[in-house]
Length: 141
Image (cartoon, rainbow, N blue to C red; front, side):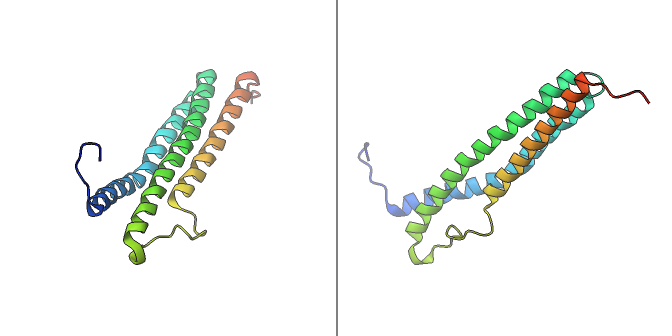
């Protein structure tokens, strides 16, 4: 260590396990956060369809951007999470518990990313719908 203090492997293990535990707690708080943010944008955009369609287009487009950015955030989170799992598995040795080598079922992060891509598609469908309403108003009944 640069400051001359040696850190034991046991201390590193405890610290990394604490980080892993905190990240795991965060992982299960992320979906409701995304649902509230994107769902709130959809609700606001849908409420603007009758009064100001251009605003609705902008909000649906912003919801799509938020969804795509959230996928990238989850990718970075997954990489860090995987590194912690790898380090902990090395230190656990024969006692390591990991699903990392399994291909099915998909990981929690992959499921969240899939749902965010679905939210992107739905948001872009909202953009198209609002643009169509903007330039082609509905026929009078």
